Length: 178
Ligand code: AMP
Image 1 (cartoon, rainbow, N blue to C red):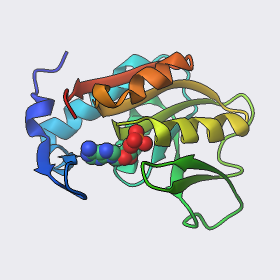
Image 2 (cartoon, rainbow, N blue to C red):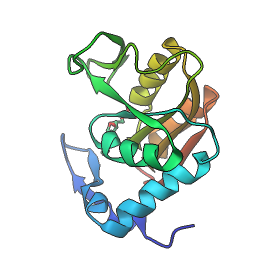
Image 3 (tube, protein in one colour):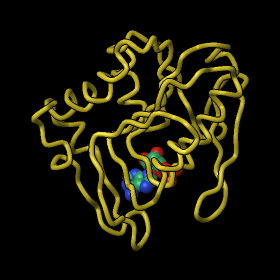
Image 4 (cartoon, rainbow, N blue to C red):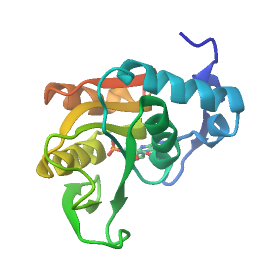
């Protein structure tokens, strides 16, 4: 176990991007050499021997972690992006936000049938984004090894929802009461 205080390196920005939201800003952790190393290591270690072929990560903060974790677990990296950003043929899935609908997309040839895939993001709130990404990975025939994120917001129920669907969820710290 790392002795780096990851939670203490995360900055909380009140009322961003809307009143009432406590934004958990990981840029302060990422800019700290020990913090970045400890986060990448902590998210990688459970999956070192899991035969991960691809780390799929959600833009934008997930990308920073995803590339580093991929090299650590011996996998390639594939991006999960918001609508219209990927240049080649995509598969996509719409998902509900508190207000409105969003969409995640992956390149249709990024994961192939039977690939073992680890999904990475910085934070799990309601779990909607991760569940949409998991749906895409499985639509492409991938086998999900787990979902790894630095932060869990347990009161929003996302990590529980994802576990209820049978996935392994691994997070490094949590903020209660959000
Ligand atoms: P959700 O789909 O509700 O689990 O939201 C997760 C996504 O939204 C992640 O990509 C996070 O980066 C972002 N997010 C949601 N809530 C917060 C928050 N309070 N602070 C920072 N990022 C958040």
